Amino acid sequence: MSFQNNKVELVGWYGGDETHALSAWTSTSRELSETKQARIPSLLKMLAESGHESPFEKSSISFLVTTDIATHIQLLKHRIGVSINAESARYKELKDDKYYLPKDWPLDEQARYIAFMEDALMRYHDTLERLVAGGMNRKRAKESARFYLPYGNQITADVMFNWRSFNHFLGLRMKPDAQREICWLAEEMLLQVREIPGSPFKHTIEAFGH
Image (cartoon, rainbow, N blue to C red; front, side, top):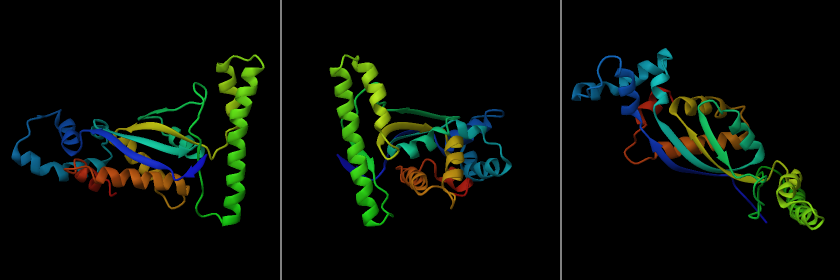
């Protein structure tokens, strides 16, 4: 058993500034001349400022995230425009025990929390085995023993946004009053998108003021 920070890894992307611009130009001409290429930054800014955001749905950004359950639940609230698949304790036994530790807690509170989390994880595994030994089929034992797993338990999920949904996520989760864990997640996601080689989303990020 071990505690660890939440994690984010950018695992893939499609499209970017040019894809968004070409989508907007579909109603006229998608031919991309040098002149139109130079207009992409101003076009994206105009689209963002006017609220004409459908062209920004034509890209995708995919992450692998490991988060506490509480943060995972907040991610699920963005399901419109977001694709999420996560490891499930209903279908498998979570053997790689991991949990999140709030680093801004006093050390004595951290110690109490660690003891609680390790006890809960031990109870989860022990209960699963006792239920199976008592005659319950393993599928039902797995899906019911997970009731011992608290909010601090971490699971891994793959999360994919189109830019429009990603921008909405950033706008809500990077606010000063957002929970610290989801705010860090949003900031780290944006940082990793900024660092994509070639900066394919550079002008889109600027257009939305991030």
